[in-house]
Length: 218
Image 1 (cartoon, rainbow, N blue to C red):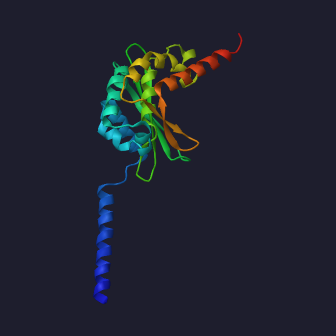
Image 2 (image 1 turned 180 degrees about the vertical axis):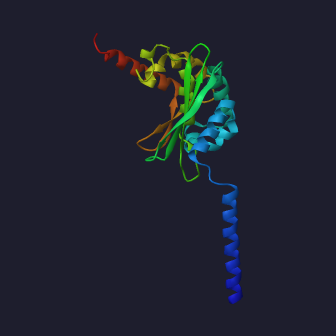
Image 3 (image 1 turned 90 degrees about the horizontal axis):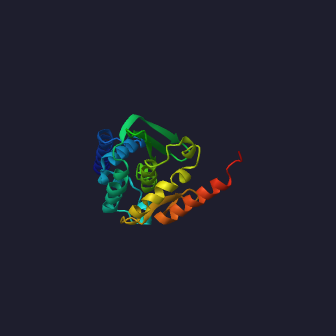
């Protein structure tokens, strides 16, 4: 009996020591570390790294896999970002209520255009995960074609309104992709659903109409 207890004690000690050693050698990745890893991966088109951080919900909702993400990056995002260079330091905002960190990286073009790419990384039981990767990629790419008129850019107008013309111009390209749309996170339910490209454009068009109808009289 005493021998059995001693053996059990040794086993427990070895397991505890193994766990502590693993944690020392491979400490948990913080939200900011994960966000920077993903932002760097997006910048260089590293699909395998991005796919490690995509949620299962987004994969299933829009049928996302490595080949579809690769096509989205190469044919849309990287195409839109041609000529842009990174500018300044990354910025981040952390929301404790949802355990979500937003990381922002600024890019500028020699012609004066500016794009601020943002990624949202949230804590989960499986570690840090990208909340809505395809949505973030889409809106970052659309920024490249936003108007340079400050009155037609956020925060003067909503993002959807500013993105309407760029989205309309990009629709043919987007609908030719293997992806049928981007993943939209429903905050009320915490679920992700497919937002088809054309449906998103129609939503932007409604925003454009509403803004025109509610402009203050001069």
